[in-house]
Each structure stands twice: as structure tokens, then as C-alpha cells.
Image (cartoon, rainbow, N blue to C red; front, side, top):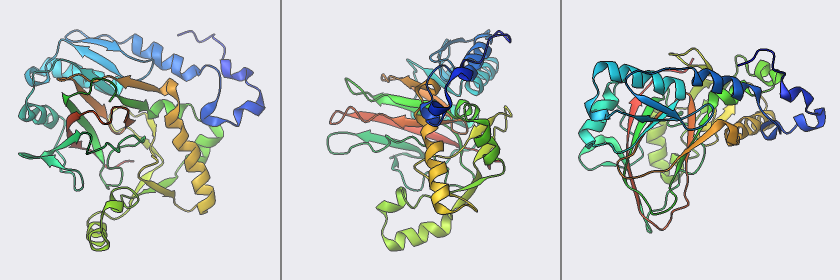
Length: 312
């Protein structure tokens, strides 16, 4: 990385800066992060980046058979690349859970269907009769007071075409914001709520019961990663309701601008599934989007989610 290299965005006419997430031209902070990641070294696993700032495929590791030293390297790669991908995993549901437990206690999701024999495993079984509705950018369970640390997703059956999952780096999204917007977000708190997503499938009595269990959660719009110390843009279009202390119209406009940062391809990576593939993402630092381009074909996945920490 050359400190003398000019900032290419300085030549963008002021009239084009108003597009925000659609800003044309290169992004200097993407170059800087790509150079930082390229300098990382791993001894026990092979790490192949799949985009400039997010995502890496890992070779030389089976999550069911990781010694402590290999696990530590895998953990470091996960923190650095924010989502890691492993193919050809010989892994049972119990071994998937055991791997996830090395990062913390497991969550039982109150709304999504579980594996028949494991409450901690969510089963996504899509077909002609059961379509997928995860094709929106989101951060899992941000409506909880303590959202998840991350998820381990295993492919059991993949469609012949499509069915990829996309991930977006919300650290890069924050760092790419105009300075004036970052200043405006200092100390801002957003409310996250399940009501306009999972709540839509409940009747009034069920909503009332779940509301007592899961009241709206308040999280900083910009959270700090508890392990890396990096700043993360932490709002998403599925679960974030509004920014506290701001007129609704102003809150909606600002949130719409912030949501659009997740749509920037320069901050994204994409993973094509095969049976036996595993993805493990840091839910604190990324959002994801399950591409629903395979219907009516069949796609079967199982996910284990690790309970995280209260955003700060």
C-alpha cells in the first residue's frame, strides 16, 4: 500500500457525490483493506480471498477434526475476512454443532423451523411448494437485545443452478460513508423489531405473547466489534425500525441511505453452494442475502447460530 497514492475520489464532481451508495469510481479504503489482508500469513491452513475485503475459502481444514492450533488460525481468518467458506466437509449435524460451540452457546430461534432432532439447528428446506424469502439484505436476529455472534451454514442439497448466498462487509460500508454522515451517526441509536418481518406471520395473540418475550431492541447505529475494535454500520432493512430522537421522515431518509450501502458490489462477495459446503459468517460485521433464483428447484441447508454480545 502506497501512502503517496492519491485519493481517486477527490476528482469526483460535487454533483455526483449526492448519489451516496452509488458513488462512481474507485474506493480508496477498499484498496487499503485489500492490501492489508494480502499481507496476512497462515501456517496451518490455506486461505484464498474471494473478494478485496470480504470472504475467503479455506483449504486444509475439516471443521469436525480441528486441533487447537488449526482452530486458532481458522478463528483469525474468520475475524479478518468476516466470512469463511469450506468445501467437501465430512460433517454431521452433531459435529456442526460441536464446531459452533467452540465459539459460544447456541441459539434456539423462536420463529424458524428446527431440525427434527436438534432444536439448535434451523432447517431451510426449499422446494416448489416452499419458496425462500431470505433474499433481503439483513443481519440475523438484530431484534434481540443480544444478537448472534455468527452462523455456521451447511449445504445438504444444492439446486442445479443458482441458490448462492451473498455477503456484504459492513465495516467497509461504514468506512465508505462521507465524513459528514459518520459525524452525524456518532451516538445514534436505532430500534430493531421483529414485528414487520416475523411478526407478520403471527396472529394478534401470538404477536402480543412474543412482544413480551422480545421487546424492541436498542442498538447503536455504528457498533464496535468486540474482538477487532473496528467500527461497523449496524442497521438493516429487514429488522431496523427507526433512529431514536429523530423525526420519522428524517429517520426514514437517513436509514434508506444507510441501507443502500449494503448494495454496493465493491463491498460484497458471493458463494456458490455444493453439498458438503460450509459457510461461517461474523454476524456482527456482515449482512447476507440468499439469492432466490433457483425456485422451483430444491435447496436444503442447515444453520447453527452462536449467541453473541450486546452491541456497543
